[in-house]
Amino acid sequence: MTELHAVVTGASSGIGAATVRRLIAEGWDVTAVARRAERLADLAKEVGCATFTADITSDDDVAAMVAELTARGPVHALVNNAGGAIGMDTIAASELDTWTQQYATNVVGTVRVTQALLPALRDSGRGDIVIVTSTAGHEAYENGGGYVAAKTAEVAMARTLRLELTGTGVRVIEIAPGMVHTEEFSLNRFEGDQARADAVYQGIDPLVADDIADAISWALTRPHHVNIDQMVVRPREQGGASKVARRA
Ligand code: 8X3
Image 1 (cartoon, rainbow, N blue to C red):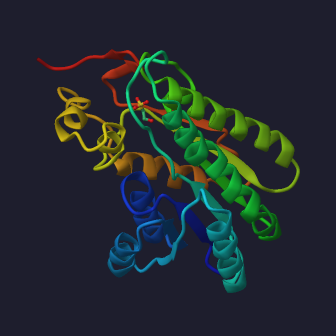
Image 2: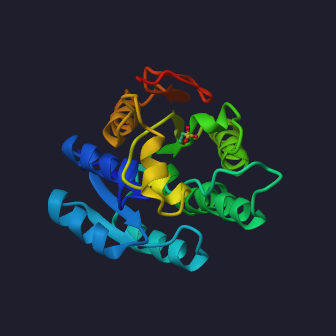
């Protein structure tokens, strides 16, 4: 059998890079997609993945990516991981631009890449679309309005897409992580403020990127008649968005 080919977005760090490593270890042929070419080159050197430098908010980039990937052969899985959070402000105080940006990356970016690769995924005969959402898509929390709204929309997208693709042989798998300590998620959210970013994970054993890569890889490697619709993954000490048991 030919190798299965997965495309992973947001692959230059964190959950995306961990997913690339994990799928390569599982024997997949993987294309890592992100904006930062140098980081992709390092990852390719480390694990032997293919790479494509693209910004998922750009129609041209995504069209070029799909043209190149489909010319190379079939695409069996798409892991939509690119996105992220900006800021921690009340809705009253938040900048509208942060809402627009979070919607553009998390929601519209995911739709853009999914639409563009859907014909190839259907043609593969066993397509998979993974959407990495967040527990923020399932539970609101104060000061997270823009991110909660974007992730809630992404959850709705996953549900709708699953209905629309029923009977086509394409699975739609939503993975919803809680607190995952990655190099960049909270640092980006707090615009480079390392102390604030570190404080998010103080006093708990947070998830790490590989925990989510493990969940993604597990869902993808179930027999293809099994669709893991949704998986919510949190650290043990996080009972809910606003309920975290921290050590003193
Ligand atoms: C990340 C989880 O708790 O920061 O998607 O919203 S949280």
